[in-house]
Image (cartoon, rainbow, N blue to C red; front, top):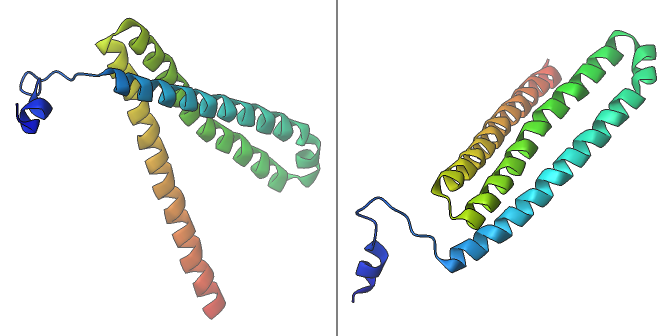
Length: 143
């Protein structure tokens, strides 16, 4: 049997085969994404407590303090979504591996796709903002 025949086995039917090595690798992935999700939730909770703990300082600062608090809450809201996607990916992946469920595996990878799409968009937005700050900061030093 040719190596290409082995690689192409099952490809024409549109089905994917997940062998035991892939399952072991996915279990490791599930563990690490679960750890990252839990750390993300812990970070978010601590930051939220810190934000509301510094509410007194924000209230003394007036309007700028309110802007600072709204910014912190907005950043926390942005950070919760990727953690939630990692959590759902881990849960669905674990259930898919235990029950050999293609539907749950598809759902798990849907959450992983959402995670990477969100992070990609977030990186582009922040990179664009930094680029604008660099351009306008450079223009401010010229004039």
